[in-house]
Amino acid sequence: MVDWSNIAVWSLVGTWALVVGTLVLMYWQTRTSQHLNSANAVMALRERFDGGRMRSARRHLSERLLAQEHDDIASMEVVTFFELVGTLTHRKVLDDDLVWEAFGTWVTAYYLAIRQPVDLVAQLRQDLKDPLVFHEFEWLYHRLRAIDQARSAPPAQVPAETSADVDSILAREAKLESI
Image (tube, rainbow, N blue to C red):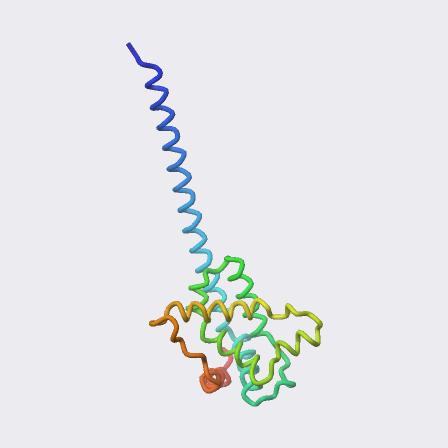
């Protein structure tokens, strides 16, 4: 004789195992897809960052910052680019470790250069009466600094960038040629 209650129980257990397995597989596929999309987006942003137009903007901004010609900065395209990267990273569209690898040095150098010795961001915020101008770029700078500290050994001893470090990076940027 067939024990129908036993068959029903095993059918139920098998169905639930199949449902749970399917959900785990879907979660894994979604996470993998997110990582691949983030990597592709970071690579596309990096290509844009290294493109002719952006290289020209980087050169222009670096030259003006090095010469302390803050009133002559006609384009904030580089800062706006990092504002976009910050927004996408903050919203978890981009993986922050990938952004750190791809843009960390430039984010730090440009952020510090536009904040010291003249705080151009504060001036813009005051002029535009908008306290949120470039707030995502600011968030990105602090997030990447936190990654620097977490990856250093020992963690608490990440030296702050000096103006000489920033000037060295800006000097290289000022020599960029358009492609």
